[in-house]
Image (cartoon, rainbow over all chains, first blue to last red):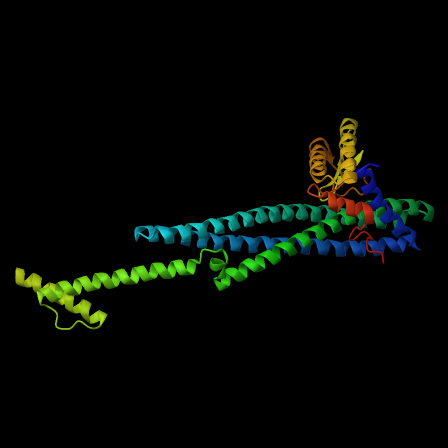
Length: 261
Length: 97
């Protein structure tokens, strides 16, 4: 049998079953209305939850983007220092981060779409609930018991279908955000602990450490060269202690410049 | 004829569209029966797109039941098989115990 028909029969069967259970149809109207208002609260909360999830993914995308930029800078830095091996490691790391970023981008789009749809569903339910309230008062005030039964059934089945739809939509949204939160939580932890770098394999901490080491050793080299120059010029009296050495050598340079003039 | 697309609301469609939908519905049915995920998704997307393009959305304050209900546009064949098998709809009771 037709899928579309079977799905609609499932929805109708639910409403019929609920109607069968009612003793006083008029009381049911009020009871149902109360439940509709609760459902409305639920769907609004659902929209807020999806929005929170979306914002979180957005923040993570920003963090990842920063990491990606950092790897790029490290690769350039390493290359300029003649360390192609380190540059390669940094770029490999960057590629892995970019893959993660692309994954987050997909999640972000999906959450955004869900948020929009759920917002619209919430607005539709809101309109229907308001209409139901009006209709329920009309039914209670205007119709005889026999007539009222038919009208109640119509209104009830119609609103029941909407509630079922919204209920399913909220459940799907909840499932999706729960999945994403689990993944987002893992990325948050990794970003916070700095483990992301090791986790994605490149060991970027070690790249940075290596680059820092190169930076430090080239500082030492240039300082050594300067001191050698100073010693051969016979200028400085004191060479231990960085600050002192720099100050002395500057003083020496000034002296030399003065002598030369 | 009124068609609801889950998550998108109800639409009124003309006879031409209804005929096209019936054809797509046969594909959906076969895909559910044979558990063909790709065929199912393709037919579902086509059906939802058709209803949204050719149908007129019902006013939000109109309370009526649909003649046919299409699953969520991105529903998987497993999800629909499950729905058809156990008929579980959260909030289905419309608040009735």
